[in-house]
Amino acid sequence: MNKENEALLKTRYPLLYRKELLFGFECGDGWLQLLLQLSEEIDQKFLASGQALENYPVATQVKSKFAMLALYGDNLTESMQEAIDKACEISRSTCELCGAQGQVLVYKRRYTVYCDKHAPVGSQTPHDYKVSMSSKKRVYQLNYAEIAHF
Ligand SMILES: [Zn+2]
Image (cartoon, rainbow, N blue to C red):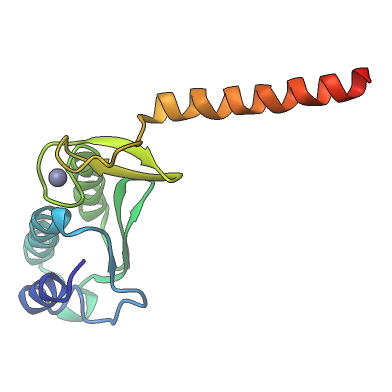
């Protein structure tokens, strides 16, 4: 995520992002709106809980993991976790580059959500990727079989 967007998140939700994230926000800028929305929801849930400020949740890691938004932290309640799970579900169909409707694709062995516009040439759906990997494996096995034959 670019510096401007990281700064925006930190400025708007200084408590949630009070701890320096070791690797920053490890996801594309297309998920900014999703993260803003999630942060807002976490904030609202905290305010509704009436807890002391010292119990305010803190994010420890924000990343894209297998084409899904992941937010780890401390002091997260069950309902905050539910909000994270929901955002995670939405992220699976949100282009990580621009935020438009997208789908999970595999490119250079990496799982990312791309819209039609941003899908790199040569990217594959996870299904096609698995099929191509298993057919490669079959070719190896055939080669071994041939070697064994000789
Ligand atoms: Zn896109």
